[in-house]
Length: 346
Image (cartoon, rainbow, N blue to C red; front, side, top):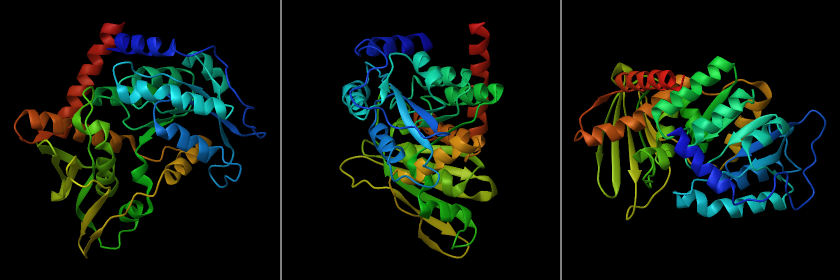
């Protein structure tokens, strides 16, 4: 798997011109500022995050971080990746961002990393390089294309003592954060989250876009998911999770002809109300920049692991005709896979 992923990246990288190329004056880096490099110029987040971070009027947590470098990447068998990389790469060049042909060339010239590759398959090998170089690392959704790869990234980071986290932008919207940290409806006993859920053939069903709504669900419900079951049709995924203490959370993944949106209905001991709304990228970018400065990870890794087990388990439940699947069993199976993978790599 790693060999085929790297081959795809090499093929795509060959499309770009010499390293250190740019077509405008580079952004100014104030004394003491952190230089951020972007891996994977294949998503609109690349431009949105760069515009927010490099805004001359940036203040608070965002001030003191500057995007200075990028590595295009791209997966040749995924149109959502390969068809966009050239355009986003040129947009960064036009902003004076230095473009490198390899991650290895870029790493010595930056302090922190935004891993933005829209396809989750190369994330493990890309993260491996950043972690080995000791660079604090944010990984955009999906953290990887399998639960096993998510676990391996966390293990590599723990072994190297390099801070890493991954999140959808939905997690840090104010309404969802209030439900998590200062609920106005008492103790949370359940949540029904929803989001668009387009599919991509190389990823488990929920990893590609349903991750947004699943991130809302786990933001509000927290850790403790024990089982997951899934019913899917051409237009809908309905995924049910049971949590410790008898709590129940659901995710509804929406495809045409349904009207898509982002949100949640939250059930508490004192009331029922909507959970919040999408508020753009800035709340996430603020958290990322604070993380880069402090090294403090804003999400417990176990919560992210359970999130990806929930999503991978939905695929397994669908395969089994909707039967519930144990989250603990999924995690243990992925750990065993990683142990065998490491053994074979020696």
